[in-house]
Image 1 (spheres, rainbow, N blue to C red):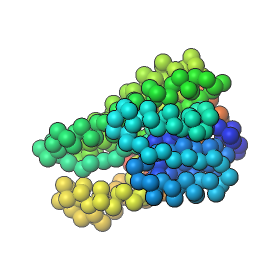
Image 2: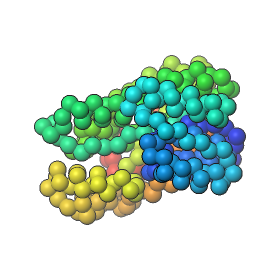
Image 3: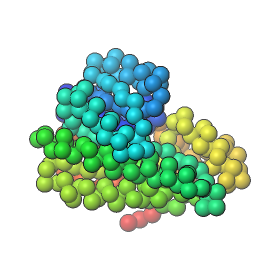
Image 4: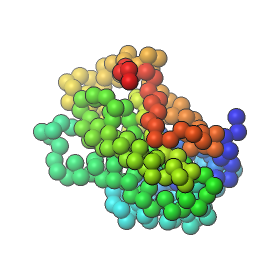
Length: 262
C-alpha cells in the first residue's frame, strides 16, 4: 500500500536509536524525508547515513529537548533544512526507574521535562509550520504505563497520562486545520535501552532481569516482546495520508499486555 508519504517531511524527536529510529526507518521506506535530533553526534550520524542510503533526505540536529529552547531549536533547524514540515513525531523520552521515596526533585524535573514538556514544546513550535499544508500529522509516542498500572514506572506513568490528555486536547484544537493528532502506545519492545532499564526495575521488584523479561512476555497474548520495526510500521500508517479520519486516539501496540475492556 502506498501511504502517500513520498517527499513529505517529518521531524522526529529522539530518533537516533530505539523506537524513534525504527519510526524514522519506516517513514524513510515510504519515501519520507526525515529530520532527527539527539545529543550523541556519533550515533546520530550513523542513523542519518542509514536513512540517506534509502534515497531520502535525512538531516540530524544536536539538541537538548529538556528545555523549550532546545525544542524550538530542533524544529526551526528541521524546517530550515527540509524546507517545510508535514509530520511531527514526539518520541523523545524514557523511564527512570524509581519509587516515590527514591525519586528526588531533580529526577522528577528530568522525567517531566523530557517525557511530557518536550512533546508540548515541540508541538507548540511546529503548529504554524504544519498549518501551511493541505494536511498534516502529529504522533505522540508514550507507553502502556500511561494507561494501566506499571509498578516502578512513576517517571513515565504520570507524564504519559498527561501526554494522552494533551493528545486529545490538540486533536480538538487542530482538527479544523486538517491536522490529526494521535498517540501510539507501545508495550515491551526489544530496544537496547531496556538492558539497564530492566536491571533497575528488576532491582526495585526484587527479581532478576531475566525473570522480569520472561514475566512481561508471559503477560502478553502473543507471548513475546515487540521488535522496533513493528512499532515503526504502525506509526508510518498513523502519520500517513491513508489515516485521514482517526484523531485524538491512543493506539496500543503491546501484544495484548493490557487486559482492560473499555
